[in-house]
Image (cartoon, rainbow, N blue to C red):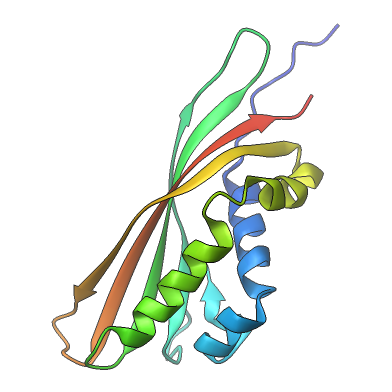
Length: 148
């Protein structure tokens, strides 16, 4: 009998989060298009946009299963003097992801993982050296379990 091996959930989680965010008409309307939710913004990317992909993963195994605690950071970038648009976008992202472990689990199953929990840890609005740009940082903490 072969010993199971631990598999990273990071790519599957990122794919599931992006899929969930892009499927939301309210969020894509705030951004102007679904293709403004990206892993890496292209040169000249129009504002506003969301960058997904900064993650920290640590083992959270038991004697009988493989698990991970993942901290996922999303960045909202807007080009305006105020924070209202960025706060609207960040707020919608929190609505779509905070405590939505069932929805993420359904998207993760095909990649061999399930989401046990997800919670928003913070949303911070930052000013950029360019006074026309605002940056919102959102951090989510997730618990995942590898399916057998």
